[in-house]
Image (cartoon, rainbow, N blue to C red; front, side, top):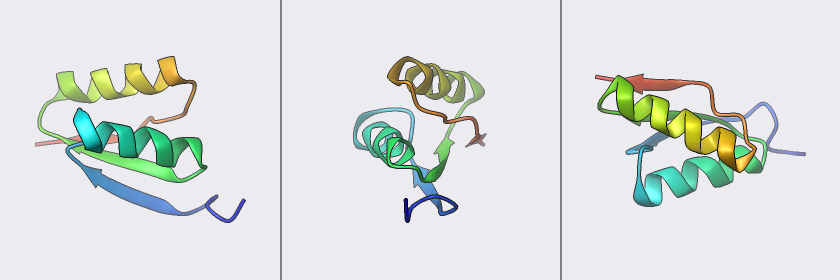
Length: 62
């Protein structure tokens, strides 16, 4: 898969288009890093990813 080893940074990854994009790119093999505004939102993103069956372990919060 050409996407393996490629990293993407998604801002606003905790909801809406940002979350959908993060999950889809993770499904396609990208190493997705999401930017969210709080640790609680970061946990929610990781939970959504786990429920979708994709790996999304890294997130950033301010």
